[in-house]
Length: 122
Image 1: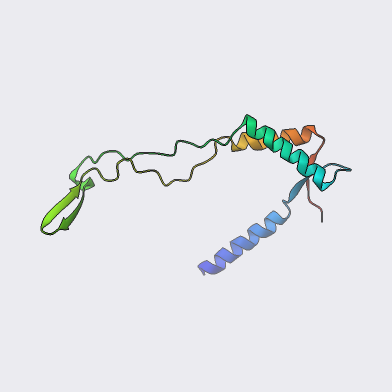
Image 2: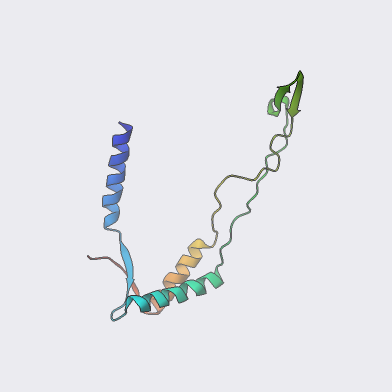
């Protein structure tokens, strides 16, 4: 049942997105010219909005009670770590805080060069 639901959801998503395909175009422009203009716009946008990530480290607070301790019995002794993983790096994915502005700058640049972002008709 779960597999059927997953296949159904993917099928609906695929069918829905097939009408979403868009591309940059300008009458009388070759693919090479578009690629060159797009590369220039991307480089300019990268200078204005470089890739910047949020702080990569977050820290777990110190253990506040005996419930937070981690103990292992080894050869008759209890070896306890009351601090846990203090200072362990976060495993959360980092996001580029400038990605939206960089994309907007590329779109504005290409639009200023006469390109339009239109639905693909094939």
